[in-house]
Image (cartoon, rainbow, N blue to C red; front, side, top):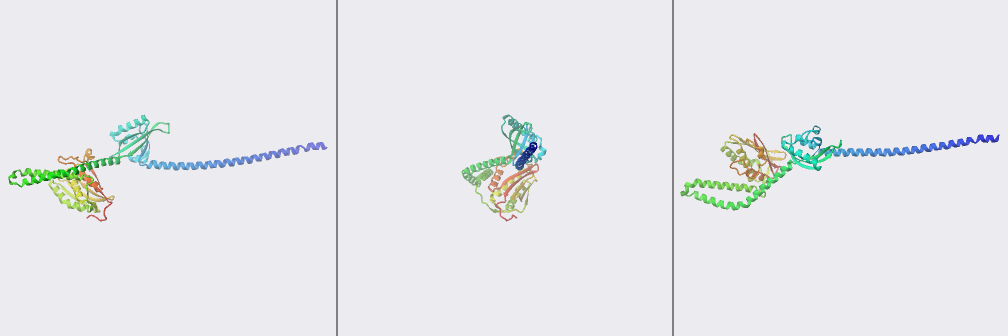
Length: 410
């Protein structure tokens, strides 16, 4: 009875103990898994947050790059091996005059002036063969018809899609810099001529003055009256030579100028009768259109010479019954003096030589009139440009408003 009771009683506590141990292990495992899951969740959240921050940084970086790419002062483009545009920034599309998306797959050669297409093809060939950056200068055809001088700098690369050959190309507008270099070279030539003239003018003028005096003396002799025509002709030629020397001296960069507050319109009105007289002799007319402009710091003698030279050139370019118009007005904080003729215009092949010393299309010209005008403008911190066409040419002298007084010309 007791033994059987003991045998029956033994399994109960053992089974109960095994159940208790099993339950305790299950709970620990659950807690461990929960802790592990929580840890991993926190790690994943941290990684997700880091990824989100990285994406934001990448987006900001991409936006900054896009702004720099599109707003760069030079053109950036990707060309395929045939020279077709695969990508281009805003500056590049502005040079070509077409919106960026319309340029995709268009050949760059379509925008190169005809004479320079060979330069572009050679540029791409050298870049491909040498596997190095290549630089070339050529002209692009712009919307306004005037070619734009650009410098191409290309580097060979591989496109992301398939690794095909492409060219990363930068094109920089060098039109202004080339014009600046040309202007500096022209001014240097003017300065050289002026310095040479200043060095020899005194030695030449002294004997000329003596010769002129004797010619006048002989011209008054009654026994030489039959030669008076020849003597007067020699005096006239000496005076012409003396005027050429004076023009030479006007080319000197360091020539002293006496600047004082002056009314440009008054200066024009003062020499207007002389211009009218010159016009009447040649059966031509002169008109004035003078608007209210500020007074300027001017050397009146030099400005009179500038106006007279421009007017004389304009009259020489016109046929009979032509009208020369002289205008003044204020534009973009500049006082403009415009001299407009009704001639046949300046041929494109000689336009770039305008203002070069000794360059002239006249049979009796010295080629110094416009060169003197450019020198005078330079000494007044002004600049000269011109517009020309079949209907005539207009020269613009642009005086800076800085340094002008508040007074107005009449």
